[in-house]
Length: 269
Image (cartoon, rainbow, N blue to C red; front, side):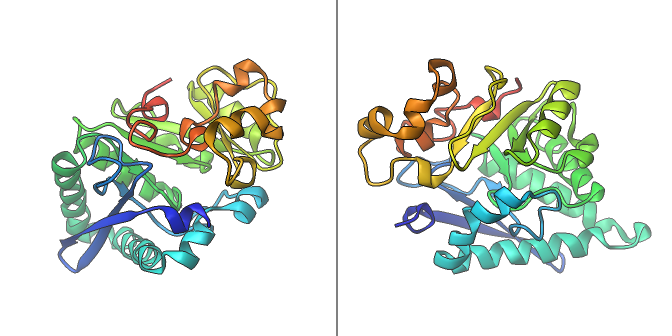
């Protein structure tokens, strides 16, 4: 059974004029919004690949959202709806941007009220345009008391979302784009979150970075201690590298092991 089949997703709808948007959440990312058994929505998501202009061959092949599309069709359909709605909103003429600011304010108000424990941009999808990056920045500024976090491969579009006090930017990388992620991380003092599919891990990861092992490396079907002790991947890591592995991927999600209790990706490096 895949993680997409086992994960409980929740969502809530908001309406802004002619537009409908869906906020989603699940047991892993719930942060301080609800708990493991009863998570509350705290994310805005799009669709995989099409909304990820700088996706790599590695992430396209292994993206967990492919299984979500297969096993959680209703959730994925909301992602598809969000993608179409936000693109239409951002395509309006500049002299007809009233709905843009209404949407920013609606997002900001909803997040401030309902996602006080933290808000994640994109369980699925990524920054697909400069205008969308500006939208994310505007929403963050309109919900200043909520900590936002994002994982992105859209390095050329970072400009609008840098230096926002309540937004933590994590650069998503794998063996295909690591050199570029490292470059941007150095230039802007950002964290790299590294996806390993075959167990390879760069030897120059920093103490603030995170390792996300692909599902196939997680010791599926084994109890946590068996995974830690017996996994070939785990045994290949140094003691320093082991500290970088995402706790949810290492131990399996639970009330104590999820975004929130672990806040590494949510805080500025």
